[in-house]
Amino acid sequence: MTRALMIQGTGSNVGKSMLVAGLCRAARLRGLSVAPFKPQNMSNNAAVTADGAEIGRAQALQARACGLPPQADMNPVLLKPETDIGAQVIVRGRRLTTAKAREYASLKPALLDAVLGSFQNLKARHDLVIVEGAGSPAEVNLRKGDIANMGFAEAADVPVVLCGDIDRGGVIAQIVGTQSVLSKADEARIKGFVINKFRGDPSLFDEGYRMIEDRTGWRGFGVAPWFPEAWRLPAEDALDMTASPSSGSFHVVCLRLSRIANFDDLDPLSQEPGLRVTMLPPGQPIPADAGLVILPGSKSTRGDLEFLRLQGWDIDLLAHHRRGGRVLGICGGYQMLGRVVADPAGIEGPPGETPGLGLLDIRTEMGGDKSLRQVAAVHADLGLPFTGYEIHIGRSDGADRARPFAHVDGAPEGAVSADGRVAGSYLHGMFSDDGFRRAWLRRMGVAASDLAYEATVETTLDALARHLETHLDIAGLLSLAR
Image (tube, rainbow, N blue to C red; front, side, top):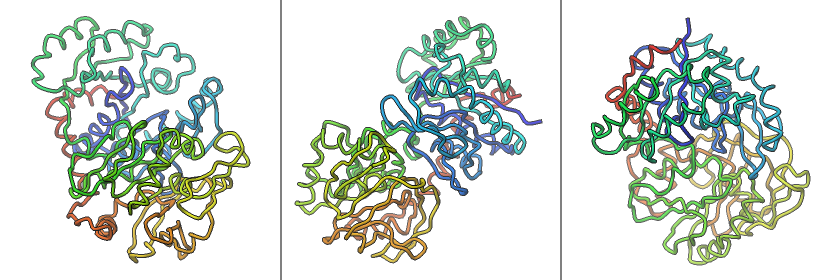
């Protein structure tokens, strides 16, 4: 009979996603058929499944930890923020609507059937399902109609373990305070806790650990030290990516847009020893030593064009180009490089047009069906094949399309400027291909490395599982599942 266990957190970004990925790999290494599940996720960093659905990037990593391809059932509700008050609602991998926060609150109860249906689909195929909550169950003002935390746990009758983050401080208050605001029924559903991201000697927290057990009556399942190799795994939140540990001589700068989306393109580059990768925060100028500036994907292309101009990055980009620097736009970043971005139907915001940066002679118009697919492409200049995926709305055309970035199914894709130093493409994930990445970097004068990116992700997941096995009571955690 399939069992399930849910990991909830005392807040956002306490390490739930990484903890679930490690537990999934640990369970798999113990011979179990295991699958990840997150009822509701909020992220603009999505993965595309083989059948053209989209789910949160964290669930794709967790699926990989389980040895499974990503599937829509693993994240049945995905919210993709387009503004400060509204988000696109993706249900079982397909866009349902765009809703403001109050509108979504009234929509949530109707989504519970889809959430439970996806959960049951996974349970029917696996020995164990490890569920990740969203935000915190302490947000009791959102308890009515909840499908992400205790509302789901109650509906699916799943036991819960609470994860606290000691790195941000106040972990005793995090856990004890969470218990204090829960209803008695929700409190009873929590079977224990784990402490995450400890730096230094864990024995120094022995007294605090016992204090949490005494005050809550919950069982502690261990203290997980900080996992130093976490940067080698794809990050879900752009705030988790600031700079690469490498200090190579070639400086790659990525602009951290306000609605940045699908920035996993940077993950392989950040591990290249010849590169120094910077995720540039708002308010800072583009460094003069940048060799390549990347404009990443965006969930709101026109909105992020305005955001980019507010930072003065449009002026910096022109200066960077005049100095001989290179620019690469991916997806929304590709659209921004053109002459204009038009949204006559108001798909991403108010209807209208926004002038682009003018570094590529193309025009983009939002409209049509959303392109969601995994692709095999061939780079136009290098003649090398690579794989990637598309996840965008809009079509781009113009004179620079005569110089495509790549070919997909024999058709031109993307655009390159006449001087060859500005390129744009709708294709994400290209740099995960080791052969293509090496050749593309050599073309810019960067020494190629022997990095095997996909293999590195696998070995890091194994190391994460060993890390958790060493410091947590994995057998005890798995015994809770029912």
